[in-house]
Length: 528
Image (cartoon, rainbow, N blue to C red; front, top):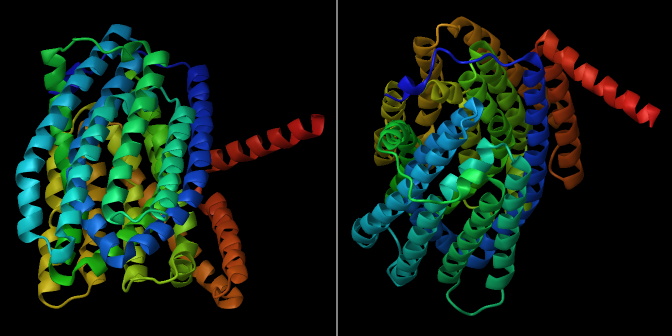
């Protein structure tokens, strides 16, 4: 078992180190938000243009075929979790040789996974696409090209996982942010290219996305080679370590399989019943969700390495407190953006896309609510990962999440609408939230389920309801059918929600810490 690698003789971190860690989290969060604000603006523009240039049908084809490959994302996510966990753990212990061994073992493993995926998708993926997918006959050739480029893109992203994990584990979030910016800039260049060519745009778009993945892979490779000693690839492969990592990753993959299949599986079921036009609406809804979810994900991403390192260094209680606080802060950050977006969804989509596919608005709202609930579990999952106990957690999680697929099939078979098909996800994601804290309690005696339920879930739900109610009231006064009123009610809503979070959502010591930071900033500016 993976947890056998965890020692009872772990050292405690001094308070000065804990303070430094908090400053690093804040600094890394700022870098990630700088990345997010830039990528947000560019992504909104590129999504609009791609939809307009490709058209609803081709956009839907790319979404469902690419989504078919993305169902295998559980492989990457599982190994990413394992790589980051083991690298962060060894960095926390300060063992340089073990860090290098973990990296080399991870690289060899990811090359093997990429080769296996390529082989299986060439055999079964092509067969499923041509035999079962609901795609217009005249676009089947283009769809097959999209499949091929999507397979290659996925394989290169798989090979990239150990390098990405090293950057995150070392907490070089500024570099991670810059590379992400380079990624969206290259995709922006794609948008300009496809507007001025006469070649089949769907095929060209898939090919250029593949080229971007290769470029990003090379950037990650050369940066890691230059800055991290362990990133010099050598023929080191430890069978015992591999078994531990693969055991962790294997069970981790099962949980991520639940997430991948529940999202892409529903997308395919929608395609079977309703066609590519609704796939386009579902794809746009998920893009909206991805933009908002990144606000929360960036914060939890900055905290995750510290949660693992604190545990590796023997500071169990500090690790738990950080995961509890992270769950609340992640939820507040996500819902601060999600609430005004939910209220103004129709106008925002019209302003963004012009011609909005049917069902897009309601699908986006349901998906956002789903992410809001799930955001409270991100750092709790990391606390479970730190302790190495993933078998029970991931199998239970996957079984729970996959219940959405038969539910969606039955709903659509009985004539239900697309948004009704994804409503069961709100139930399963809520149950999975409770599942995480119960399992964490099983493996960590210091964990208090009651504290998490009252201090996190109940507090977060109440804050959301108060904030949503006040935002609806603001909308009823200001309106939202013009750009001016949209900006005004959004700004007022965010400021109001921020005050509610500060007064009711934060604990007393957290409010005092923020006030000290603000006072320190004011004093610094006055002295300057």
